[in-house]
Every structure is written in structure tokens, then in C-alpha cells.
Length: 297
Length: 188
Ligand code: SF4
Ligand code: SF4
View: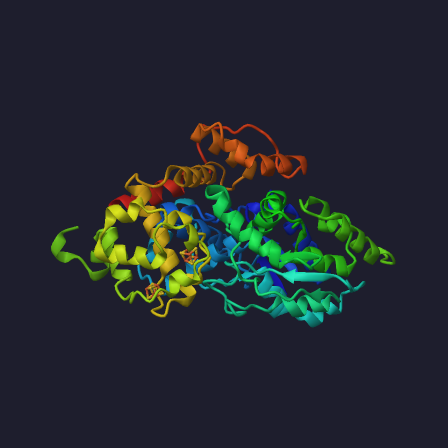
């Protein structure tokens, strides 16, 4: 199995641990990731609020880089916003006749072109559909038994383009968590919004959304996320949310591949657990127990 | 391009963008499913359902004065659930674009996105800390950085981002692409 790997901007900055742990887990699974050397920003949520065409051209440029590489494989994208943007290009080509021509008129400035047809897939889709719990279970060196994980999917990994899980009551993370020997925290908040970009523009509103999520996660040891924006919103404002809500709502928010990597027995450096802001002492102690007895390769 | 020889696609292209949005929402039957699905409607002055009605009626002043579309977090719940299958979240993006084009967009949000895209134009990628630094400077708001302080400081402490000062001038990596997009949009 091999994929074009599009890390995106957040994974070079605030979400570095998501990037490094994803690559480490893929390597452990024997999956090849092909880096696109000259990749550029997908436009995030900024381009679509300023220019329709730019919001298509920015992701399409990356698809065009892959198209000239003469490799027949899908994109693997860990960031939900990048995933939505890259996938949006092909989703729109079918219904908007002149679009491809316009995109290529712009890409021609860099002597690039795109004809459509490259599949953009979210990391969660690849983990759940292509790799699957069986293959993950086979690599587990130390079960995370006794660890209760709240699976959090967020919005854009599922909506508007999903197809690999139910967009309102998703469940594909559950067998993956169980394959690690951990327990699933039962809640119905997995597909609710974390407030996304409102955390920068309308903070009070976003805080309402994150506090509802953190409250519902009570009883879990950690939240598993698959999106840098969700991780940041749930992780970085816990003190403030706890203060407003009058109760301690601190909880570790880890990326799914960090948890998978733990069970695979990968080292601290491969998973960068220290980079997560909220990495609570109780979880740290629990994870340290699992590490006893893991022999490093 | 002479008026008489327009193809259907071209008519669509040169149409008033507000008309295009109205056309998209024509089938809205005001059932309110979108409002019921919107996690942020509690903070909006008009609900999503009311917003579509204002679009249908062409109440542009009320529409662009409302806080509704700047409170959309693009969760896509309304799009998913609308029984008429209308592209609602994309419509909100189109309204945001129009507000920016008309110069009536809410300053804070629009400036943030403009700063973001200018960073993309310059470097091709976004370095988050630099983006924040530039944004604070452009907004010239002494209070604004304070609201980011917990995050910014903690990111720096964690060594995730470097506190370098941004460069404002000079040609960008993506100049050609940005120029061409502008050119095509001006001619349509
Ligand atoms: S759900 Fe669709 S049809 Fe119903 S009010 Fe909203 S936009 Fe209109
Ligand atoms: S996409 Fe925007 S308007 Fe629609 S439900 Fe989500 S926040 Fe509300």
C-alpha cells in the first residue's frame, strides 16, 4: 500500500505531533508515504471566504503536483480541513463544466495541469477502511487495557464528503480503539462541532461548543482526535472552560495515531506526546505503565 | 464578448452574484431543519432559515448587517440535513465573499483571512506564529494579542512555533497564481 502524503501547514507547526506520529505508525504498518516536495497550502478556511476560484486552485495545485509523478495512488490527508479542500476539487469538477478549464488556466502559470481523478482520502478513512482493525491488532505489542478513549471525529472528516462512515453517528474509530485493547467511552458527541475557526474570530461562541464536548468526555482518560483544529480547540482552552464552567474539565486530547503508536510500542520521540498541551499527569502515569516491558526495536 | 453570443454558462458567469445565490436557494421551503441543526444559532441574530428567506426576498441590507454568516463554523450539518439538498454551507461562503467584495464584511474576520492568504501568497505555506504576528499588526489592536496570549505563549513554550518577526515586503512564491486568479475573476 502506498499513498501521496499531504501533511498541510498545521502539521508543520502546531500539530507537529500529528505529523510525526502518523508517519511513524504508517512506517510500522509497512505503508509507503510519498511526499510532494513542493506542496503548498490548501487555502484552509480562508480562501473560500474570499475567492471561489482561489479556493479551487490552491488545493488543485497539489493534486497537479501528484498527477505529474506517474504514481497511481490516493492522497492520504491527516488534517480534516485540508482533506475537505482537496476532495472538494474533484467533487465540483462533475457539476461545474468550465471549472477545470479555469483551474488549468491558472495552474498553467506554473506549467502545471490537473485532469481530475485523484482520490483524496482522510487518514481516518485509510486507517478504518484500507488498513482495518485486524492489521492494526496484529502489530499491537502492549494492549492499552483499562484506558478509556472518547472517539472524536469532528465535522469535516465526515461532512459534507464522507462515504466511509455515518456522517452523524460515526463509529469507525471504535473497532480501531478496541483493536488497541482500550475501551470506548460511550458518548454521542463524536460528530459535533468544536467551533473550528470561530475560536479566532468569535471566541465566546466556540468556548460554548468546546465546553459541551469536554463535559461529555468526563469519565474518559483521553479524547482521540483526527484533526489539528479540533485538537487545538479542545486542548488549549481547558483552563478557561473549567473556570467558566466551575468544574475541572481537563483531559488529554491525543491524536489517534499517537494512541496507535503507543500500543505498537513506539518511543516517545516517534509520537511526540510531550507536544500535546494537555497531557495530564494521570494519563502520563497510566501510559508509563503500558510502556513497562516493551522492548524497543 | 458580445451580449448576443453568450452561451448559457457565460450568462451564468456574468450574472449578479446575488442572483446566483438566490437561484441556489429558490427551493428552500422554510422548514427550519437547518436552524435546528445549527450549533451556533443560539448566538446568531437571524437563524439560518431566516437568512435564506432574506436572500430570497433580496433584503440585502438586513442580510449583510446580520451576524449570522460570520458565526458559521462550517460544520456542514445544515447541508447534510436539508431535505431539499441545498448547498447551504457553500452559500454562506459565497455570502462571505460578497460581503468582502462589497467592503462590508466584518473587519476582524475578513482581515484575519486576508492576512492568512497573503502569507500563503508570500511563502506558499502558512507559519502559524508569523500569521498571528502579522494579523495583530494589521489590526493595530492592542487588546487583540491578549486574547491569543494563552495559546501563543504556550505554543512558544512548547517549541512549536518560533517567535520570529514577519517580513512584510518582497515578491511571493505564489504571485503568478494569485495574479491570474484575480485577472480571471475580474473578467468574469
Ligand atoms: S433545511 Fe433546507 S429547505 Fe429547510 S429551511 Fe433550511 S434551507 Fe430551507
Ligand atoms: S454549516 Fe454553519 S450555518 Fe450550517 S449548521 Fe453549521 S454552523 Fe450552522
